[in-house]
Image 1 (cartoon, rainbow, N blue to C red):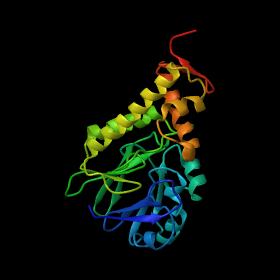
Image 2: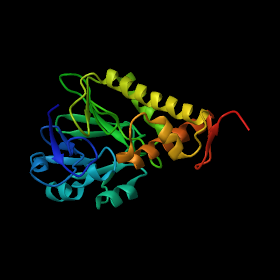
Image 3: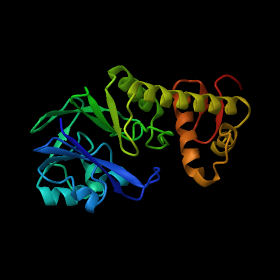
Image 4: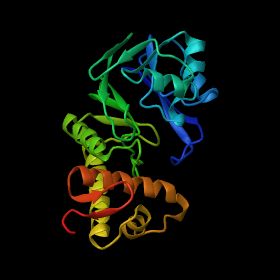
Length: 263
């Protein structure tokens, strides 16, 4: 399957200041994550028949309406999320997909893989190539660093499940929303899982050590200065507390955290 990608300059917190847009197929192609208008994206628009996004964050959807208008492509959205898609993109979808939906290109199908967690509607797009299966994975993974999973829309239980699904699926390559391709997806998934579980241990230890509010837990759970990304760090801690509360390993009412056992 023919693949072309471009780093599209866009306002994003991700390193490099660009979102990767992907064109899958040589003809009747699928365009994934048209982030912003301009020359980088224009190079991908020839013979595009379908447009879809991995999720609705602004740094992935900014040129959906413009690309659809220029190409006349069918615009796809996650089933049940049509209104959210329209609000994010300014364009109503023409069709919807769910897990396992096949979007046909001139070179064969691209299959939708549900990967929620970073965002509730998050999906990936899998396709066959001479290297084996490749997966456009949006903000599920990154070659370096970690991916933001913060409350209220981030769900760490779903995110870890999605990473484990990718580990079990073992594609030949992951094609992320930001940065370079991940050539060893199983190792990449394990690294990201380990990172999240390590942060979880720190959050739980902070609660067991007497931290009660989200700011207090954040101060105790991070070994580095997070003043420059304070809101993101607190959103991440809140997501961890929500996960631990569902699993009954801490008590958390949205304001105060307490150890699972105690008065």
